[in-house]
Amino acid sequence: MSEQNKIVVQRFNQYVIAEGSREAFDVLVADRFINRSAPEGTAGDRESLWRTFDQILRPALTDLQVNIEDQIAERDWVTTRKTITGRHTGELMGVAPTGKAVNISVIDMVRIAEGKYVEHWGLNTLAQVLSQLKQN
Image (cartoon, rainbow, N blue to C red; front, side, top):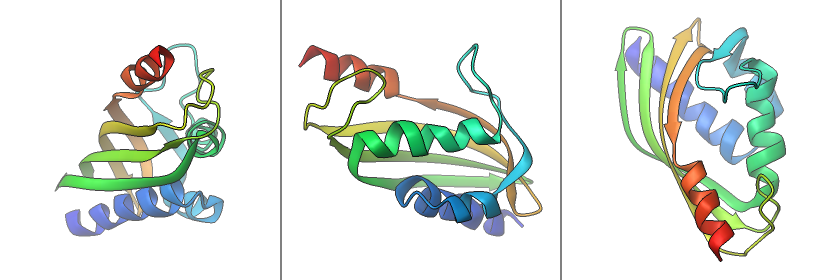
């Protein structure tokens, strides 16, 4: 089961984050999904997860790619260390395009049930990346 859960996470990273497939998102994310790491005051539901990629990251980063560096799976949890990269060619959370390369480091813990994301915890360096982009 752990290896199958890793594949679910790998598919999510490739098809949803990197390629922007709504169809893959609908297959891979449960209706009852909850993002435990959603910023305070924001929704932590399924649609807010989709908007993170579809309305924030993908429009801001050309050539967006996800590189999975490590994955550990135990029971119904998969922990992934990855880097999201791209070129900053669109507005990113209020920061005008700079044309610079962006590298966002991420550590995610995702609980999988019946082949779908049902819960997420995560840490990332997006705030530091935004700070660096604002300085230039």
